[in-house]
Image (cartoon, rainbow, N blue to C red; front, side, top):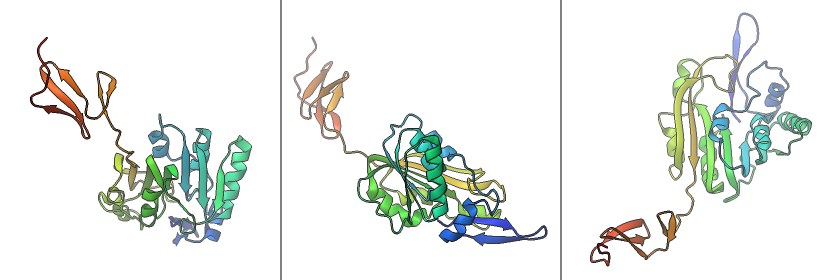
Length: 252
């Protein structure tokens, strides 16, 4: 977790602090650095999951659990990982208060075993996605999706941080099907300064295994079988319908 924030040290000066240690994040979650993050679930996450079936989700860098709690309330089987024990403590307490079930672990993404074909959703909001991406692709089940929100390099025009160049985020998940990609100026979830920054957002799905057979007039047709479309002969091939010459179709 490498979120950079600016903390006021006096009325005359601001000091830049890039927190990389769990102990430093603990102070943030206790509120000692002021309001530097929203406690609401990520808006892009909420939008992308509308109508999506709740299955098994992994929230990487769960913080105090805002996204994990949203997922659990929506019926997802949620595991959240977070190196700061204060964040996990708060997430577990809020889950208990709301009667929600989450699995919250104090660990880093380097230590955690993502597994293979384990998850239907992996959430990465303001996390080191470039380092995590290879694990994500392997860990998603077919049909599973990854959701990412982070800063574009152009954010450095207004704030000294940013990770991604134009379309670089999409390239990290080249084997996935992009369902939504955004590159916008907006208010980030982590922002002590309260500035609009250039953000990149991705929702991409691991392709499911190609289904065999075809559909004709809403009825299944096995691979190799033929149908008539007027006088045109069609055969169900591996890639789908194709026309064939010298078929048996005739005008009735």
